Image 1 (cartoon, rainbow, N blue to C red):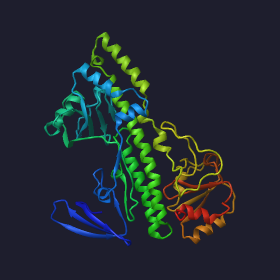
Image 2: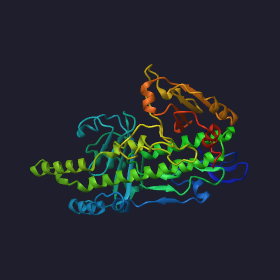
Image 3: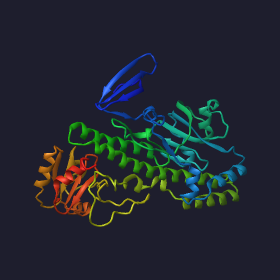
Length: 431
């Protein structure tokens, strides 16, 4: 890995990609030749722009009203601003990333916390459970971000002055975007913020990007090692873009809830008089009604599946477990991540998975034909025998084939009738 260099342009042909790099100071230039180029170059991705791939962006306000069924938060916010005399927001957020040795900055909020969300709309995050924090807070419309004093900005919101070192301070605008394509241009592919951008509500940006890296990484490795086909790369886009769209919807929903909490807040909630007590109780009820899904969306974080993937063998029996934002149903339905558990002997089942494909065998079945089919295509496959009643119940089938990215590729109670067909499908040869 080399730091201090950026992509300037690239050209691809049938054999590979030629990338031209420029140094951070603009003085140096280099040319690199590679078989593939992966653009992980962020929201302003030069790679995506050169490929001519557009971003599809949704309007949070429109989604709020038409799709999410939540209150008309924009109107609520306008009323709240008129009542408080606050300057309306224009969508920008001001970020201050700082360090401090003061361990008491959270005391006025009831003790040590790691993620503090205020009714006024700002969020303070402990980054390392120590001395590093990040504040995100809405900017008033028309505010010149370059003239904001970051220290004063933090002190005003936290409610006390303290010593701090500002590492980064800048304005940014939340976006809800997913790229129209993740590549599909031969040897150049995209991952991470280059193909999806969401607000930090829920923390899905980095998680989705890491999922992209894993999904694209194993597909590329398979192609470069010869047992995978270009169909795996096309399947990467199919699988990961569906997850990005789902996660974008969840992040939008969480953002809408935060906006609704801010709209419901009144300055009287800070009063020590009877009106303050009433305002706090009312605000508490409204926050409770809106729910805490942002921090409890296990279905989004654990329950995503590649249901319609062209490199997953569909299950002919039963129906897929229901997918919701808030519920996670452990399952080995093809395309899902299998459940994590400790076996009776204390071993973690995931620790038994191999770098290639892993066939979990929970009962005595002759799988020689499947092993031979994998060997014929040079697909790496290891058989792991598990004799654990609880694990068998949780994994639902006697045989469960797990991909290198720990998603289920195939399952059955008997070996497949046409093992070569299964092997060819999971390596992308049927696309």
